[in-house]
Image 1 (cartoon, rainbow, N blue to C red):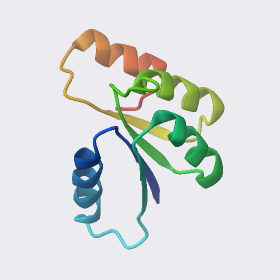
Image 2: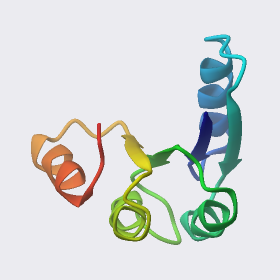
Image 3: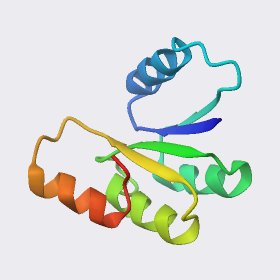
Length: 100
């Protein structure tokens, strides 16, 4: 399984990567990037199974990334990583194509 983590915080990238690796899956391949623009390039070349993305990033919002990935690569599952606890924003992310 290939997972791409997208977050402008290097600390969050490492925390999420280590958490995923701690599950001990043997066939888990993880890539990470701190930019949504770079994420689109990585997705095109690497074709991950899952994208985990932050909501707030400087170059493109996570919501815009979700919308773009959902349209271009409907087979990729997408999840938002955020501290936002707003039901309207959660609904907006799901409507854009985020699975969870």
